[in-house]
Amino acid sequence: MTAEHVLTFAERHRGPHDHLYLLVDALAECESSHPLSVPSLSQDRGEAAVERILRPDLAYAREACPALVELAAPGRECSKRLLELSACYAQEDLAYKKRYVCGWLLSPAPLGAVARHVAEQCRISSSSSSNSMTPWYEPLRLELLAAALGTGLAGVLSPISAWLLPTTWGSFSILPGGPSNAKREDADLVRHTQRAAKLVSDFLDAWRLAQQGRHSFAPWRWNGAGILPPQAGVHAFRLVRDAQQLGLRDSRDIIALCLQRVGIHPQLPRHPKIQRDILDAVKGVAPLEARFERYNAADWKDIFASLPQAANYS
Image 1 (cartoon, rainbow, N blue to C red):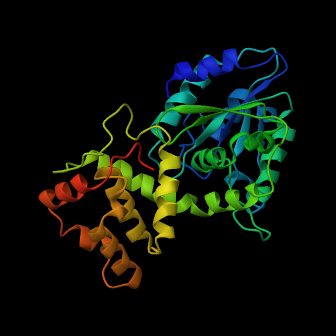
Image 2: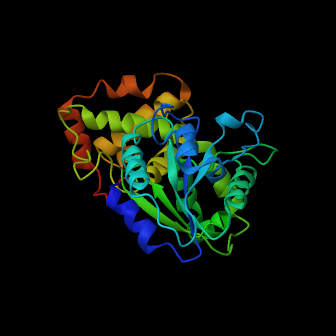
């Protein structure tokens, strides 16, 4: 993501009645002295321009709750400095466990109404059918929601008319809001994606780390622009889901299989030797990582050569 992308979003997608908001997560890292910290933004924009989103599980600790900041009122220009700073921060925190910049939002609704909507969706989009909550606004979780719901996400966002989302692969995505057209079966899919979010995040961390290493044979290693390929979060979710459907339950086994699929070949589970390794891991005979360490470059080349051509990572 570059500052130009954020500036373009603020200039070209904003209607005459839209407020421009910045959503930041107080549970993520940001030094209090940084211009984007909530205290700094409160001083810069004024206390009335900052509204805490009272997460149901953190409502007792306001300072730990995410903050929605009005960068510009309808018809008013936004500070180019704040847009550039937030764009740079979104790029810098790409590999952090928790991302501070959650997105830039456009809405004709006032600050308080948008903050309450985001908080209420924490319950509606919960990963459990019980009385719990999910921080759906976190970039990875929202990326997974967008992939799961498609156009149905519009109703989740409304009254937000557009959300500029920093993605897992270092780019951005504009998510439009609007009337709801969600289907009844979407609820289960939403819960599934949100339950898997932590494991997906752990795998993405491992994938980024693997990208920095040296490998004797990794024909499917990503070599394009950015540290991860486009739609990395969606690929990661599908790979994790596939591993679970194969019977794997230990997160280390799941991540080990996913890493080999994005390095050696996406269709790796179709090979008989790998199938036996997976079955042994499911039975608790031996962890997958230990089994994979037995293969040298020549072994992987033989396995790779026997598998059908794949179109993408998942």
